Amino acid sequence: MKIYVVNKNNELNKIANCLEDFTIETKNDCKFKMTKNDYLIINEQMEGLDKQKNIFFITNSKEYKYIWNLVENYKTLDIIDSNLPVDYIVNRIKNKIKEIA
Image 1 (cartoon, one colour):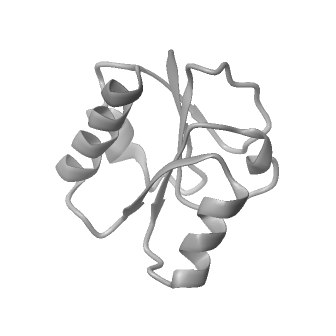
Image 2 (image 1 turned 90 degrees about the vertical axis):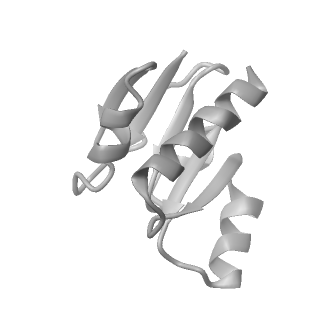
């Protein structure tokens, strides 16, 4: 099991560093293959995202239409507000992975 962090602007580095219990791989785009046991942490929509699964969105938008679009169009596990503390975000991701695995 790997956790891929798609991180164009290095905004998710703190989260990736706190997930030291897992194998983390940082990418710049969504053009890679995942197995069914892998997870993806991303903070924006981008090309190739529709082919990925087990997605954690870290977003600062709270618009209903935007959130609904993420849920309907992608294989989303969770959508987390980026304004929350890093510890909370990391614990929420860890708990969701444990719940699934």
